Image (cartoon, rainbow over all chains, first blue to last red):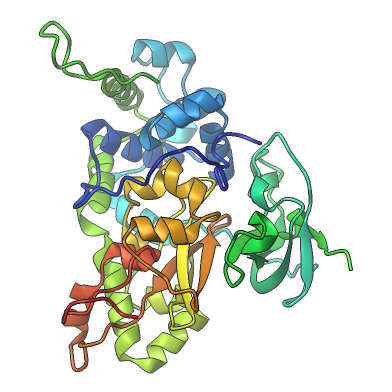
Length: 224
Length: 210
């Protein structure tokens, strides 16, 4: 979706405020939001792309006004309700109206499992032997698509030409995966290298380059 | 979401709206049995105290000290970093880019806040903020100057936008005056910002690497 989260190339957002000796968290509630989000993920009701869309899919003024962990909180509440794990009334009241279904009890993340779960992480690659649509060194153009769902092709590269610099292998195609179960398909991901002047015009430094990771589904052969 | 924290009003709660909303959600999920209080503490402890840029600094120090390790790191970063014991969530698929006299690398996530947690910990606020995300790809040299980093016209700037599940770590240039240092001493010189690419590693003799 063409939301406020897709920020590459925007003006007017101010100077970078790099805090010296910044703490990991600025408020206790930020710790709680991080932990609640990771622990709730253990229910297996959503994937990374569904959760990213839940965070992105805010009115632009709200997205820009919310801090990072406020956006996580907005996303988590949305995911919990949309997946049916809790109701909007339960969130409004802060009280549980029904216990967790039996089949989900075994999924609850326990303290003794935390280290192993974090160390294992997720596997976003797909083992299938899927042929690559593009070869390293091949010129490509990013499709000029504007889907309303989650996409990993930022606006600033759409319609722009670059060169495939590296084939990272076969990964779950995030744009499709954000649609939920049954949409987990594998595609090659490439590091596509764009000259800065292709993206930003003649005022950009001629030697500078921007590399963006894009899937087969984002690309076409560059016009010759 | 409003986050009013009006400490000047003695009748006003010192808890912000957001704080209350999070407390309410946590108590709901605990009551429902969906989350476990000890697991929440373990998650917080991990990212607040155990994982951080000291991990990435050890990777960099080893790459500076062992040419074979550096080759491995640049060829298969995920395996080479796992060899140091760092792997897992938000670092499942790693890629390392090397700064040289010809190219300076800078990492951003314009769409979100993707960052290599196992080697750098959780990202700093500025990395997740709109000013950095909007300008790193369009005006990287201006962004670098805001961090006090001047890149010569003869050096190419290469920006890596982490749009997929690859997580990027910059291998900074080893500064002068570090010959004969142990890996532990080297790691102590390497700060988080140099591994994102917004700064260089300063020489212990003063000044930064070229």
